[in-house]
Length: 366
Image (tube, rainbow, N blue to C red):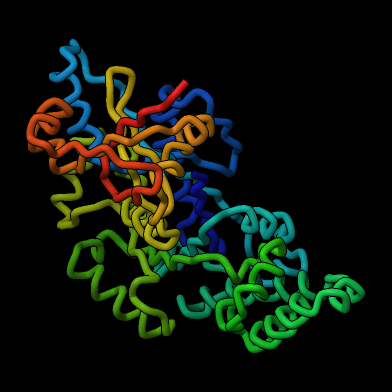
């Protein structure tokens, strides 16, 4: 499952500080994932999941191992879309290059700075609302150009696509996103290959100071900017890029202690990853054994065969059954043996719909 988030925003809103914190996490990850090819503007980091540590502890005891088995988190890719400025859709600030990067990601994270700092010069905007609208406007302009470049003859031969394009041009010219066009399923499929930027799922990331980074303040900030930008509160994540930078250099135990002192349960990065999962309708199922304990990312609603295919495509062809235990039952009964003895392990067929936290062992034929 390719989960990629493009970090966008005007210069000096905190993107680079946040991305550098991600790179520190990436460096710690490199030893466990030597296969990852990492470009300068791309960071690949693990999805936080405390369940994996508990599964590893149970597996160690159940399998009589001397050490914990390796833990493999699901991975998320962050792409730093730097240099996006007003006029990007016309090539300003290397705009064409960076807009092409946005086209490749699954989710767009708009970073907006919501505090004043006399030591930081902002470019092109004076407040969070206009910051967001500047970026959004460039994405819409880029989409308008994409639609204008469609061959007229091809549209005459495809009435469905022609109807979709007309609807899209109408809403985009009014400053609204693709979602406002009310396309039919058939029309949507006809323009899917265009990969329009304003069609992508988005998260608005509010970058606050350390003083505003506690649970009470976070709720207050989200409420304020949800009203200001006229979006549902579910669109927002609050981070402190500076705190993320500091957390990246600490051990996991030190990170927990620091966050506890700040009065927050999760880091901004964890909030962002969870929100990306939510936006894309993703869940994780878990596997465990002597070789490794691992989280696998799948679409919510995926069946057992599709889930098996995330491990290897051959598993889909040779699928027999899936032995499934909920995470809570697996922990309560201390592993596979206890769960089986208590009748909590179930044999499920290919059409079984997977749930988040399912612990699974696939039965595969030869």
